[in-house]
Image (cartoon, rainbow, N blue to C red; front, side, top):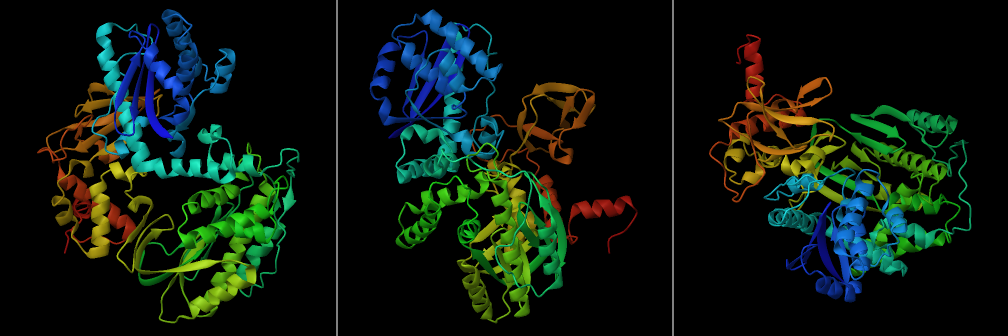
Length: 603
């Protein structure tokens, strides 16, 4: 099936849709042209296409299916009126697309996929355009209730095409592999392609849940250890007894913190986490527990009672192992199917909803990890990092860690793998950078500048400069001044839709109203700032990072503009570095400026 990307705009007296295929071929259809031949061809080949859009699951699919059903028999003016009313129903009444289909007797003819479902909740198309450094950001050029003139059509077509281009870029650079997994999961389970717009978790539910069995969810329960953990450390014994003493219920929150040597450990209902804060280590071994929570679910029978066949999860785990060894492409859909189990058990609207089993899995997993930590410490190893499915120890030259871990894994029926790292800097459990033996970097949290993260378009050059400094000793200023691509310096902020955002001058006079997504770079020749107001509250939008800026709605070249203030990005990098290491940086201008304010001379 071929992907066909598209975007609709609907007005009281006009509608327009731009289609683009995977090769970039564009077709525009609107209500003031002879659109019937084009829609006939599209309808005759409808089963050959997957229609892809941004938030099309809510809006565009309704318009497209309406047209495909009505275009032959409904006068153009009535189509315009009904489509505009549907648009208002969706936007202002927040009606679900299936409700609209029922009210207007629309049959669904299309296979749809929505790229926005693979992104974070509330992420807008313009925000993704920033993260992907799309050259052009546009705001709807004509208010949605305005009557459209013929001379307005090219402007609307250009706006639609730009949105389609961002959607294509989002697919290719961000979510394409995940979208392919959805299709593969459907094929793996032998389900109808009408489920193509569903999440992997929902597809797995359809395949595995027996709807004739009532999902039983207790109101309260206690944690029951499924195995004897045999703790020898008193603090770990206390943790187990604390868990056993809790009266649990859906949505229960629990958190405890303690230290294991220099590592601060946090145990909560979301999992176990820990790190030696602001630390640097050479020679590390990462012990990753393969499919940890799914294995715990299978080994101790923590699956919901309405699963058709509980052996299906065991089969999935075995299939994943086999497909991984044979490089079978089915490995990824199987892995995604497995991973969907745990999260869905905590989602109240899911047919897998089973908070009692969810907490059994989480708590058992944490206690098993504590047992492994205890065993490794007893063998003389220091644990410096802990997350929900693994931990990291310092390589002290003793290879017995592998035997210790193997014995633990065999006792509890688990699989694991070991990865060696040359070195790593940990700010905390969520922010670190590590280098493996082949020089590849693992970056997490604020150190991650991949396109799916905000750091990809928020002074990326400063983050990369810190990583280069930590890993290779490259001076911050030297690195930043050697970078000559404007995309490395771009920054953006997204403000709530109920905020009014303004660009103001140094006297705090409003220069212009801004959209809720603002992209810019820090400039040498500007004296301005971004501010927002919400009711009586007026605030500088993001402190020092949005002062003295040049707005960037469009760029044609990647070269550096003469007004760009590279020294400002050096300051940002020093700030990031100090947060990462906890140490004052010798030539950090922030520190020098702070000292001089207090009359302290730097030695």
